[in-house]
Length: 164
Image 1: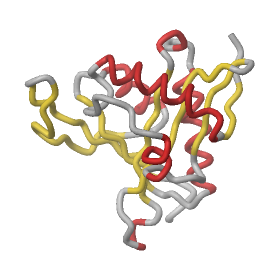
Image 2 (image 1 turned 90 degrees about the horizontal axis):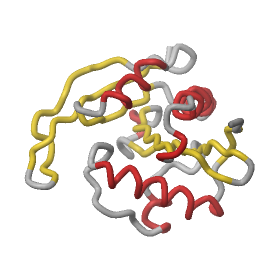
Image 3 (image 1 turned 45 degrees about the vertical axis):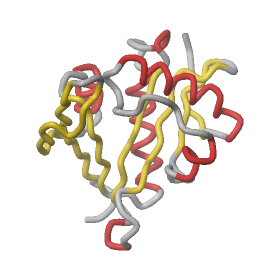
Image 4 (image 1 turned 90 degrees about the vertical axis):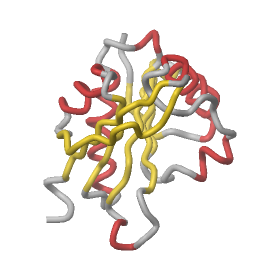
């Protein structure tokens, strides 16, 4: 199946939300247990770095940035989220999204991408490592989900283009 990487539009929200809900259901992608409203989601993600993978009109996956801090010194540091639809996993969608996303983030002046992943989410860890992220540590017992404390692996990718 062929697909393209494109800018996310507001009209993509229903598909983005559906893919996010699939990720939530795995209990291995996020501590969240439900999807926020569009307004909440929109206000929590940078508007200049939002991509979708699309086949015809169907959204197969998405990637966005969240601010790490509003302090000016951290203006080039952001947290990346990437989600792929269940029926599109294993087709290279995540790698294509992150590869394009890295270029878009550098054009937006981002010098450091961060990701927090459950230590058990080996597919996501492998995906991030495949595009240049490295492990920088982990947060032990970061939060409890379904009565189980979960550790979060911290990963980072430093730009070779932005930030010297």
